[in-house]
Image 1 (spheres, helix red, strand yellow):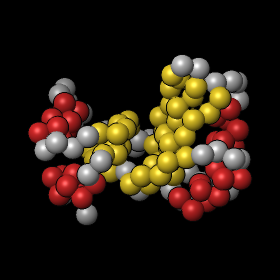
Image 2 (cartoon, rainbow, N blue to C red):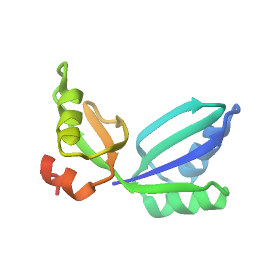
Image 3 (cartoon, rainbow, N blue to C red):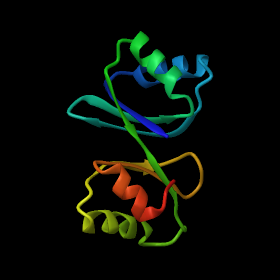
Length: 124
């Protein structure tokens, strides 16, 4: 999976505009995260079609970063996130983003050492 992260202006409809453009191209979002930091909207999305997503973001003049996103299913129990993050930290792997998918009990994360993280969690 691919994660696209970008900055939007913090104003009504900014994210809706991007979501509508993606929807018009039949792009489904598998995961989304967003928050406001210093009056800027910081957004991360995991689409089902990276090619169309690149096209939409470029057409809107939105600069973005693209990273490989890893997805894990977690048991719905206390401490599961801490366990995952602890294993990465113990290996010296830095987490760049972390949030949930639209599927129940799944976590999306990006890291600075993708191959090592995949090996740790046996992700193909």
